[in-house]
Image (cartoon, rainbow, N blue to C red):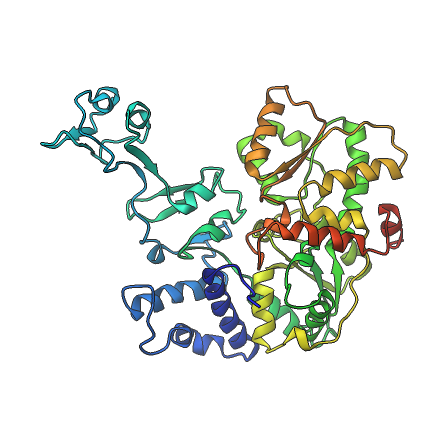
Length: 473
């Protein structure tokens, strides 16, 4: 069974696997230059002009797999040398241009960017064009189109532009680190920094968990991943890697749902704080609404804080579908509790770097959260949990939630709130379409993931939020 949606993901995985394999053996520094040759050996045919360019790009992938540019605070990076296959973006004239006499496109252009050849066919001077689109609007044949690159289409916050070298450039002041561009780039020219070496270092230095204990905290969306194996085998595989134990971030979701429902009733209006990309979006695009963001930490940080309070020897590694979680873990409010973050893509590479076939393992148990904590993984789950939290705590408050499925839906709700025309008192913001199950770090993406999350929720022994949280006391 295929483990990844795309060949781009598979290539990224192979680099991560080889970097991890060398790190386990303490041979990474001496063999780092040979990793591209391992992946693209000899005269292997490539999609690039030559094997040497492919290896040069792989060297950049290795660099990002080792943590990337330390000077760049963004966890998303562009590999410039790999970003050269897309056509130039912007408005262009297609062969649908009939060479008409009206020349409306020329008349409407305020910059004089449009000229005509001897057949009256229009041409756009890119040095003058300001990409306003006025010409496209007036063309009677729809012969002028706006060509956008896949990364620009994927980025709903308009953080990506094209630089002078014709490569994608990310505006860190706009980017919310959701990773949509990472997943959609057909050439893998945009990638998220990996902290897989940090995880290996934590496990190795724990001395079999005798110096300190390394906890693996898995996001509830794990139920829709690793579909070629059983969830219990994944849990066992994590312990085989050297983790002391495996806990559900869904338990942190239960804790947050209980606290957030109470906070909502006290304040009267709230936006969720669980999705770090959504919170970044508010901070960067709707700063006037920051006061409404829930003061609760995310489920990841909430549970990690609890773990470290109860076990001072704990080190916490969060494993999930989200690239923005890597950025969240670096926040001053979260850094003391979460030591580092892995995606599901990186976990697969970690398994294979130790030749762990999880399908051959016995099943272990992962069960310490409620149904409501587990369904946080999909859009609408958080709203359902907050509603349940109000009921269980006997709080008399009428919830009017608006689950926002994807950043465009978030924008609409936030815009309406900023104009005081939103008929809701709780905004559930999920930057990825589908919720966490649509995260860029997933092995697989798809509608089936939602039903798998719901089924996983139904398997929870604790049906009520209060029951799950009471186990902590």
